[in-house]
Length: 293
Image (cartoon, rainbow, N blue to C red; front, side, top):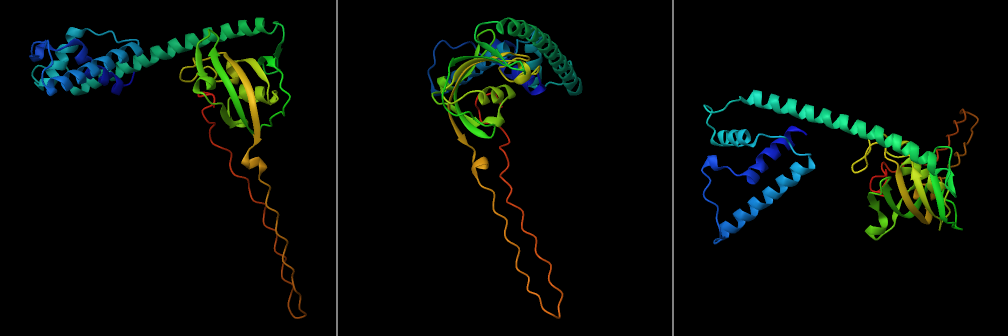
């Protein structure tokens, strides 16, 4: 947890726990004026956000009596009451933030190792299941519908419907739920997708198991934990050549004809200009899957 987040927790948590030490008036039992209404609405909103933030961050183990004391003393700006200087305060917060970060890294590392062992065991068993094909890279897939269309090339743009889940069944993305197929350059997504789709003809539908080393590796990404085996149901709907691949190269110009005279040396023939370079490949894949660039 960084310092900005920690301070945000501190400032918004005040609305959760109250502050009688600051002379807070007795709680209202009815909202009469417009000021009452927006004051209550703002306080309720801050309280809800603070609660959600603490839950999302695994909460912080605080002594709330000390917390409220420090809040009140800082709010009143009475330096005589302060038990910690500004420099000491930020040193403590920085140390706390670093410890929390290290704890998270250690926790994530343990979880990633567990995920790796689980996916190895699963893939070893799954490759013996009827109809499951295992490629040299370790990618596994099962053909549900065998399409009859064309095979995509790595430079093509493909249109795909898919649903992605983790090994435990947790869904992390779905073009079907978004109501529109994903369209993206085949060479701009995770390696497992590129390899799989090159094996699928248009109209083919498969269930695939993509090992973490063909996806997001030990670090994971957003809602995908480190070393996660990704499970996809995927249908290839269409293929089209990218504009880069489809554009013909510019023909080189013919060198100019050189006229010779008796008195002058012949002029050197001008070299033909180079063919026009194709446009650069896109820097990043579109959100298809949302975390599958």
